[in-house]
Structures are given as C-alpha cells and as structure tokens.
Image (tube, rainbow, N blue to C red; front, side, top):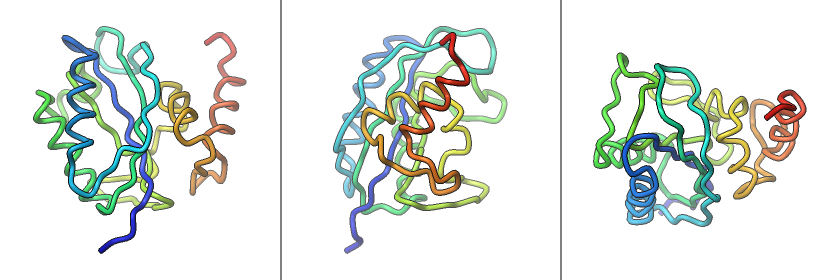
Length: 163
C-alpha cells in the first residue's frame, strides 16, 4: 500500500447554485477511495481572473491526504468536475463553470507533463488560492520557489495593497 501524501485541491464555482456545486464536489472528493479530506478552508467570493465577462466565484482550498499518485488524483478530480456538469475544452478556457477543481500540490512533487504541472503553475499568483491555502496549509513550502504558503500570501498582499 502506498504511503499517504498531503495534497491541496483548489475549488471554485461561478455558475448556478455555486455553494451547492461546491458542497457536491467536496462530498464526491470525500467519497473517493484513497482520499481523506483533512481540512477545508472557508469559502470566499472572488472576482473572476481572465476569460469572458462572467459572474463572481466562490473559492476555497481543501487539504487532503491521499494514497493516489498525482495523475490518479487529477483524473479523479476531472471526473468529479464532469459529474458536476463541467465541460473542459480548449475553446472554453477561463469560461464560467459549475465547478473547478485544481490540484495545487501533491506532496513535494515537481512535475511538468502535458497533462499536469505541479505545483500548480499559477497558484502563487492568485489570491483566491493563496489566502485559503494559508488557512489549511500555511507551512507548505513551494518546492520550486522555496517559500511557504504564508510567505507567498504575505508577498502577494504587499504587491497588491489595494486588495
């Protein structure tokens, strides 16, 4: 049996009953074999980043412990998105969505493949990931940048003082 590994999953929704979409996705995450949700941040309302004009998001981060490998966990997250009505296609990048689940980190894995980049390549630039990540894993150290989630969040706030 594989040794459990910490991982973080950012979640968001900006279509329909956003809170219900998130609740259903987190319930599906909790039901996954090989995944235990250890903590879930508070949910916050945020402005969309990129894409066409669209409504505000509800966002947060779940900290999990998993025996699934990074690719296996990603496949499970994509299946949860599909079950929640999400359609991923290149033509709809950054479009409104019922549910969005992004693997932020998987232990200290550093991956660059066509399917998955770890840690998430833009997580350290996004307040809607950094702030809730600090709630559930403030001491997590970004393996590429060598800074903790708390340090990255503090740096982001210094660079964006009008937030």
